[in-house]
Length: 408
Ligand code: ADP
Ligand code: MG
Image (cartoon, rainbow, N blue to C red; front, side):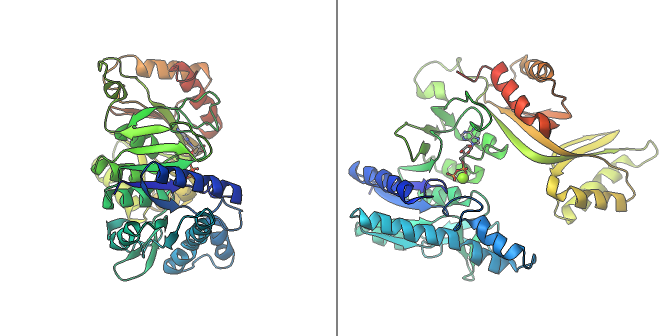
């Protein structure tokens, strides 16, 4: 069997007309000789009647401390509704099809409600249906714990479902259908002339996704990468070829020499970040203090990012929503942190950055020309991160996109 995973995001299943287009993509796969397994997200976005955020708002306003188990049961409903509707669309077009919940599909997770991790997939039931020629629709974003509890996988979890099924079913490819024609050099919502990337490596897209390019969940990429299953990001609403994610560098897959590697693949951004800075006093036991700070953050489950530890200062970021909590912890410990709320992390990603002189100079030049102050920066072999004020985020992304000639 040539199994193909086809995952459709929230915007792709939002209306009856769009669900028909989804069914057309499924029928095309069938005519090409594939056995499709369809993964669906919940219908629409926050505010839409059947969107997951809408369900959450039903209880949040009433009682904020709903047990996590019940929250997961509630959040799992969106995909069940969407999947049942998808089955009826497929049936109406003459395809025998069946809906399986995450649990029914054999997706076994740990019991970390709200952010559960897939431990393994038992694909027996899916395979039974596939062998009988039935199209299986699986609810994304959910699984079941060993103890039989319904769990959800966190934001972007349907992508992870698709990849996990792809690996378990030894699929030929995993197609992630969304509302853009592929992975682009920057979020098209803020960069008008962002370009579609024909090919990217697993590493590049994992990095972009981690840094905020929400077109695919990084975990989904990591899972597909483990078995080298090609991932394709495509639009439900066009016939564009999309982006192929594989382990090959673009120039190598094209069969040419490897010296022409592109320098920068793309630019990603993460808004709503707070910078925390602690100056060390001369008299202090600096190492002891550093240890105390990060231990306290970990104990309070405040995740920290963009950490820069120096003898005279400690600098790091947290998400805006936990900034007050972090500040309070530090003040209770006797520190006087300087805090800048409302920042954004902007990242340039490219496997070609490593060791190439002048990239940082170009970046600094672009931001200075755009009148954007850099609050902090860091780099690794394939990424350079800068922290800017959120009001500068869009102009920073646009300026860098232009400076590195990623546009048309
Ligand atoms: P879905 O509901 O299909 O999962 P998402 O909203 O999760 O869709 O992802 C698609 C969106 O990701 C696009 O509409 C686009 O605005 C955004 N996006 C952010 N960065 C990028 C990028 N580099 N390339 C393409 N899309 C991006
Ligand atoms: Mg998504």
